[in-house]
Length: 157
Image (cartoon, rainbow, N blue to C red):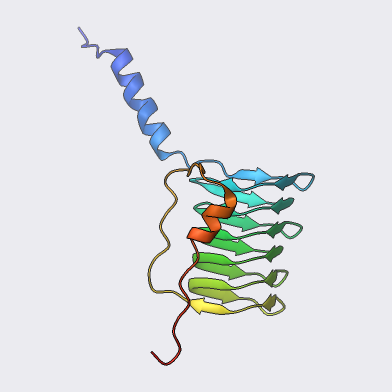
């Protein structure tokens, strides 16, 4: 009398649709946590604790009590806490409670009144490559840094 579709097929199609539309939960460094080492993520990282190391992710949020010492590479950075080191991101926002010590390379920069900023701001025109894969470091830290330094510019040339 009634036609019956395959329930297993319908259930599987609903699950894949739900999984595709769910936004990933950010990785959180809680206020009680101190990390000594680099963080790499293809998603969002929220730092409410302390990180001593470089951070590479899609989006970074530094909470009011959060602190990062190291280089940050991301698509977007929202700072409410402290960063000591270089930031390279497409979009950077410093809230009134932010304390930034270091250079900022950006496409878009917003600084609220009251934010502390010590360093250079440089607008970049090329976009920061999105983090789609967590890089694996196979070389030593010393050789990675030496090989990655830019050549000095010649004055008057």
